[in-house]
View 1 (cartoon, rainbow, N blue to C red):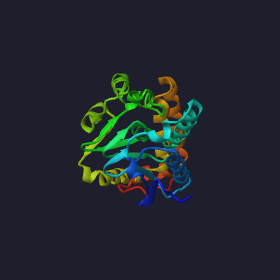
View 2 (cartoon, rainbow, N blue to C red; view 1 turned 90 degrees about the vertical axis):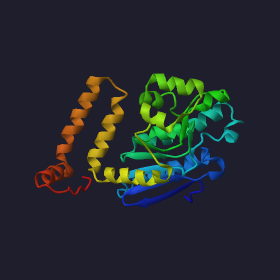
View 3 (spheres, rainbow, N blue to C red; view 1 turned 135 degrees about the vertical axis):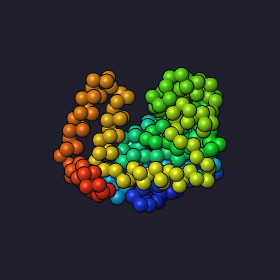
View 4 (tube, rainbow, N blue to C red; view 1 turned 180 degrees about the vertical axis):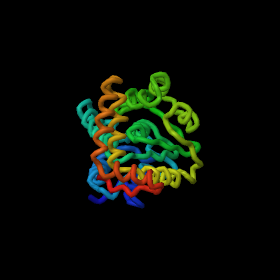
Length: 259
């Protein structure tokens, strides 16, 4: 598929996805979601990609759903559209490889929800993050009432969803929405540095870690602990576990093969 709303490149084991609808501040429409779904499937099947960065350039990560596209939708059309978004965001959330959101400028509505589907979020200074759907007579429909609560807690989630007011990058750092705030011109480089840290780890261990971390917010503690033990023990059947421990004992960097 020829990509018209996204740019995609691979660099040193990292897949870099750039939302590319600059005239709309990267507003999310059906075409962008279709292309993002195709790219995520390609990444999932590509053993060369061991980490992913999603960004939108300096002005906007994504300024939300495309209002002109949504304004004429009936309930069935609206549900179909948001279900397609949910499907793609779930692909990101459940991807074996870790995903970094590099946020610069606006991350509003669907843009905030896209960031929440990623594993690690970095923000450039001056960025604004929010769920302004209440101002349009609707509510978040692609994770803003669910992933946001699990990320920042119910107090801040209710504030953001119920007031529709954005928070700045520093507040996002304080409440745990992002893990770092960096100068705007350094955002992508910092995201690439973080990606290289992730690339250096065992792919099979990374996949297991992500599965356990994702499950933990959705089950009771005893179930989560039991799942963690099973995944931990299963890694002792892998070449990567043997290489990692051998390299530690030999005081050298491990050379993981992802098996």
